[in-house]
Length: 318
Image 1 (cartoon, rainbow, N blue to C red):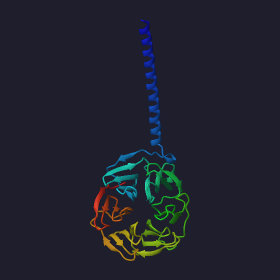
Image 2 (tube, rainbow, N blue to C red):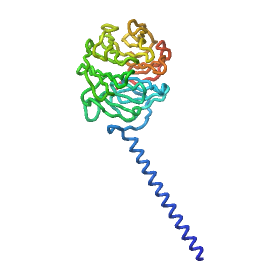
Image 3 (cartoon, rainbow, N blue to C red):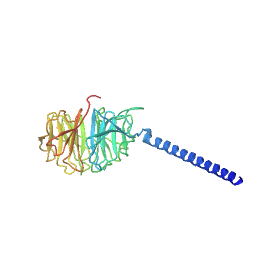
């Protein structure tokens, strides 16, 4: 009987150890889960990160960017934040930051975005915000409460250089340190009604400005501009072939145009699209693939703009 008692005592001790180990593992698991929840829900500058959230309709498109590392992925800056599409079907909100992404541009190597807009909690205007993790978290890095760029673009040749246009003060802005500080080049000769900016893929000092009075070009980093095309006509969108700077695409009220001689001459392209094209983006890995967006849809061309198909209907309205 003594042996049996000893055996019973040993069993109880073993069960106690099992219970203790189970409790310890549970505590560790809960701790890891809580830490993961905190990590996923807190981004730079106090902005929430969240996950990819499916979206069926989005509208008020402000910009397009094709991921250079995943060319089947298209990013869309909208009135309520960033949308990510994959293979023209799998559309998701990126993160939880729901500001109005008016000025929207992507680093030529991908993953890093810059935006400007409004509707931030503690300032009337966002200034310039940056994401370094594919749009999940954002940090306001400059000009908070001071500007709301409706167009902003990064230099494809030198991504430390960014350009922006602020419609309220009618000034042209330039940064040479990745958006952390900004100056005002003279922008001599530039129309006072800039619609969109685009940069040359090779020369960091060359950029284009689509305006309500035509298409302008600067070859000195924004110090001066010269009218190149579409005199007294509104140019709504502009895109430059990332593999050949002589090839440009432009949107005007009467449709899409293409130039193969740096804007000296233009030819009509495209099929029947229901929208006036407000934004253009070219796949940096395959320049034959072009995306075009209006307010109500996104279109895709795989033959350098000769023909188009509907990639994503977008609900009208805000």
